[in-house]
Length: 232
Ligand SMILES: [Zn+2]
Image 1 (cartoon, protein in one colour):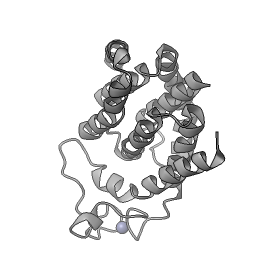
Image 2 (spheres, rainbow, N blue to C red):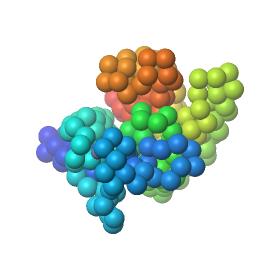
Image 3 (cartoon, rainbow, N blue to C red):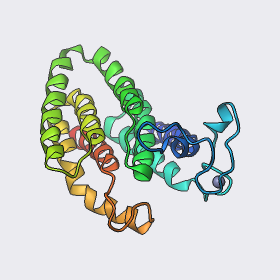
Image 4 (cartoon, rainbow, N blue to C red):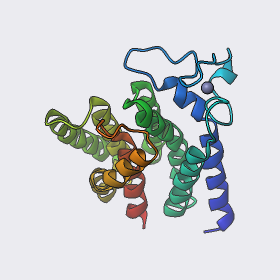
């Protein structure tokens, strides 16, 4: 595999992530709340038009840098490029990583996984994958229903929100196109990695010491790992 190809994918991941902080900040609101019209920290209104939503850089001039999402976007894209290689599936995965990263950022801020973004993730990945692998649509749907059922039971016993349940089902749908090992790893890994993620969030003060911890980022990282290990 040519290093140039991995560099291009990584650059795409970093560049697309650089556009997300303001969008994540405005969309990180409670259920049924409208997007934030002003910065949550300095109360400065966001400008009208597209620049009020999407721009390269931090959410607001009062906020710090935006290195963390850019590094996360670059890392995910690099892992996907190395694992999947120059294949027709890769653009679908790289595109799906954009709403995926946005979901992780929003979930870390307000413990929400907005349905329209989960839907966007499903469409950007599962749509092209269904066209590329029509023979695996059935298996993917079975994976999605199985994971949906398991997570509804987990949510019933507490600890998971309905947003987590829906995201897990969508990720299973996507991983189903790669194969059953990817589905199993993608389902198992989030529970193994949530400890370190919870620690990171406590250290960066994104979660109260007694507050619940977002599970969406672990689900998304688990899906990337499931995909990467299946291809390895
Ligand atoms: Zn501000």
